[in-house]
Image (cartoon, rainbow, N blue to C red; front, side):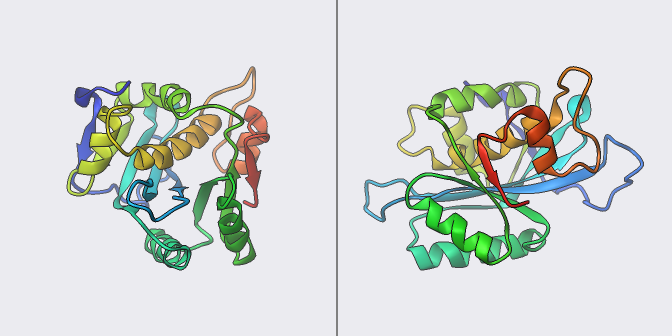
Length: 217
């Protein structure tokens, strides 16, 4: 689904304070996708956290994966501590949009983050499997709109290229959630499209994604 030659790498993140009058440079949002493991067993998936910074839109859209990529087995307490630390690094709870798959145990984490004033959304898959979700965003890699950090993305790149073969795919799951949300706010619908300055909730409602996200943004 994603070929190795589609992957693009950067050595330094663009400034989020760049010239805001130029839409090709304009910074819009930072999203943190979290795929929670339900077990710490050796055979279980890892908890994965992947953040992206969104610049430009449509033809000029560029998505930069943050260098801080989490992929490890964590207790519930460690998970909450890792989220807090990561969100702080990304700019703080009022600036980062947190997306957590809303399944089973994950609901408790979503509720905790909501109660603690994070901008959190529960992502509902509605029966759409991992492969289908990945296929739906793969064109972003083919069109070279997604950029990975050169120094810290080895595991993520391996999972992207080896999806379906690699033992774990939790980093892909976390990233795909953010990419699906970005796509929802980036495409026109009829004579309407997401406008600069729109909240992601307004974008999702415009795109008809309200049924996938339980938002507190």
